[in-house]
Image (cartoon, rainbow, N blue to C red):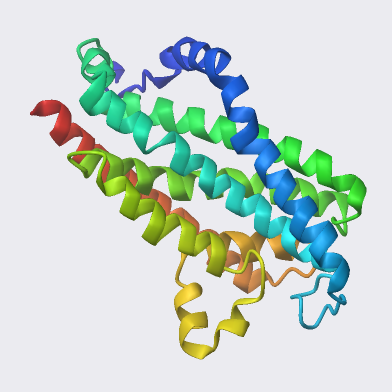
Length: 261
């Protein structure tokens, strides 16, 4: 029984120390930058766009449309930032993972503790983001805002385990440029955060709906504009949960293989 018990909680002190040393540097990337996007594109650019709920997926203004997209996109970007170069550092440069598994900690404990830290980072930044944009009247109901915040925890998991697995699989950091340019940035621009994906045309819209960010954005938006489709929401949750599970299996396999080499 003791052999299967997770020791990940024992790494809480380590990640708390990491957070205290790095939180100042993360303020700009995890909070200020998305807020500037909301002000520039939602408030200023949105002032030139006439709100039409039928064309803006239920949002009465462009600001109300773009805020949930920015919230979900921020969660995705924060995960990419935390689980690409830092993971490469743990495997290749500083080799901290090797030191961790030289103790009673297993690969599973290392993965669970770091994913837990990333979920904490997303939860904190998303909460601050929601509190700051709330006075703009972008949330149709208070409970929708709370559930949309909770959804960001699932979004963090859905991106964290696959990105962690990919970073563990790559032999060097040169692959990250492709990950960002061909993965994260296209999803950020074309997964419904800034405009309805129907504007892309049938083929590209279908491709956009296959991306995890579209599921995250659409689920978040349904909650913030109070236009919830239960069946579609279940589809989104199932998609993100399945991606989390698949990524978890892969990261245990890839990271375990690297640490055994």
